[in-house]
Image 1: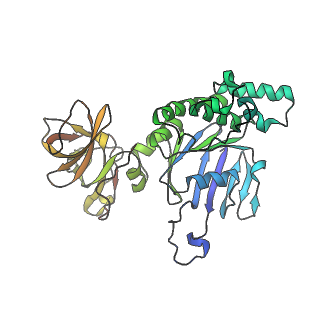
Image 2: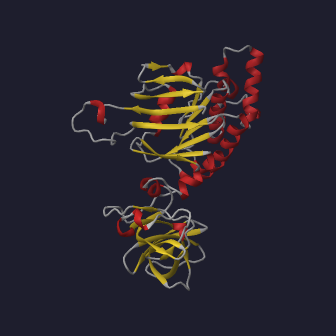
Length: 379
């Protein structure tokens, strides 16, 4: 693999192994706890997770801005850091580019001079050729002589990207570069960014708190929680086959409903409050849980509004999202569900509607009596 992180760890004062009394394991904001991941050359990886989970700290470790307390980091077979050997290559020697939330463009320099700032070691002709090349790559060759304040926020972000790409780094790290932009522009730029990175063949690791952004950009997506990497996989797999209960809870809109796995003539079957579910490829055997009892993940897109369905649910909350509503529903038995319903089905809060389950990927976990009844995450 091109980028390889092997059990890397980072502690801050007050984290579990820092010697501060009363610290709680894995609770220190920003700490990194034995994270391993890899990227092939030209791949784009994305890290998501709640605030303080260690995403940015992980980038800082790779960039050389933080010294590892454990583990090792390699790029293209070269060891950049190794805690056991006391090895710590300084940031300027790692050939890694970074793009931050704050574009940090030099206001007194033109766009071209901003992009060429890290190319002063090249001759004038080479420098100008490279500036033109990367500005063409990001679609801003026409703005080369402008000042940063004459550009839109999205254009400034592309200048920052061009500046990071200009020295041809082995790896590009991006820390929530679109967080200050509006939603529509972020969606547009995330698609542009993926195209630019692919066109340039750049290996990149991107940090975001936006799940839609992560899925749009990444070849591989990682979910972090309290310093640990809970899952590192293709976006499709992270969504449909979450490796842990936290990943299942964090990704998308959904709930955990009580269920029981039984053996049927068609194979294992999951009995749920909204009817039986069958997924021959993934459904666990009844013996996997005590008496077959488990919790099943039911996402909002698994629940279909059907007036003819025998199962009825009462609308407790509704959020208008343009093309659809996100309904929070309560069954007569008390369980809560969520459903995406086309917005022309504008039912009122308190109304009872018919629902049925259409689950292509059955995901079960051990029952947790203390688990939250409703797992909801805004997009």
